[in-house]
Amino acid sequence: VNSTSRSGRGGSLFASEVLQVMPGGEIAVEDAESLAIAGSGGGIWSPVLVAFGDVSLVNVHSQGDAGAVHAGVVQVLGRLDVRNSSTAGQGAALLVWEGMSATGHVAIVNAETSLGSAV
Image (cartoon, rainbow, N blue to C red; front, side, top):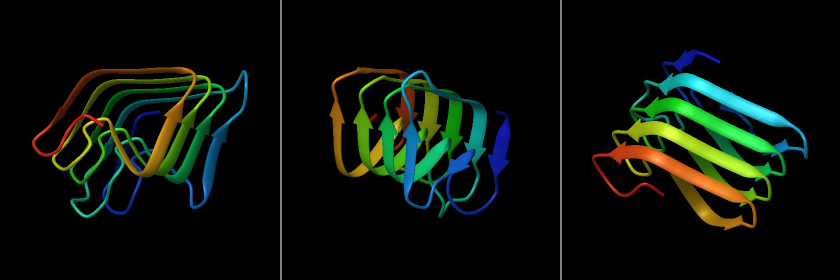
């Protein structure tokens, strides 16, 4: 996916309730950007992200918050890979409001922000 959002949330994917990747499934977002200062989530915005399968975000950026993923709850049982993400706000790779649990693989490589932290 190569996408740009000029307003709102989610440079590539917006889920109003739940984004779930089933075992054997994959979501790959590459070269996505959210240009809205009030928006967030360069790659994915969702109240709940559940990854039984693979979620890969490469070269994702946000002018608001959360370079790659902005979510309320993140649960990783499969894989979550974020590479080359940035934001002008908080959460260079992930911004999670409620909680995150991982029994699978989580990798964050090269995340940059001018505020806050990588996660």
